[in-house]
Length: 278
Ligand SMILES: C[S@@+](CC[C@H](N)C(=O)[O-])C[C@H]1O[C@@H](n2cnc3c(N)ncnc32)[C@H](O)[C@@H]1O
Image (cartoon, rainbow, N blue to C red; front, top):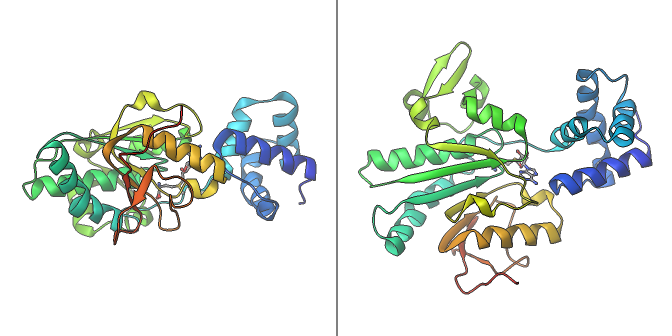
């Protein structure tokens, strides 16, 4: 199947406006591989027919499903390990030094996908508590996609998913078997509030944070959207706050609202001197 230029341009424009994802022509194959199953599931005779319906009728449900199908949800427990080590060894000690030992920590996982990242953070805090640290934390996890948020709230993972990055000791401690799957225990689930937030839209109602995970989402944005999003995250970060980004991402050359932390890959400290432009 070959998607017409009109259809490609329509999808690329809608996806960029709605999610920030930049779809370049070399990614045209994604339209074939990801929209085909969606069209079949929704009872359309072809991808072209689904796109025509979306374009002509401006069908919001179909448009949202197209954006969702073209987003990458790849994630796994304790992804890259280093961010969680940084929380334990660097961020929490620095926050306690700035706010007082045992002070309440507010953390935000922006673009949390299917939940492995916020649950890994919650387990990190639990392990720190078990080691005697006075951790009082609030975790807010958000994503654009209602589909992934449903999975986050259910906290139900397949055997394959729990085998990716999750230590067996944590599986035994924080999950229970449910049929063929594993469910996160109630205590851990109760520690995270899941909400739908589009990073392109206002999110100041979430309040101020000490820690923000914004990992592996801005790589899909163009330079302008990346800068605007990072600076709006900075505006919601306390002056002593921290940002964690993916291994292939950086704030360098994008904004000076955050500064890299030497020897800590992916960790950025809020630049306390930075002010949001009026
Ligand atoms: C590759 S996953 C990253 C998951 C996790 N942060 C990690 O690093 O493992 C990217 C997520 O970003 C979400 N996303 C894409 N555009 C978004 C937007 N404009 N606002 C909020 N979330 C968005 C997608 O739905 C997807 O779940």
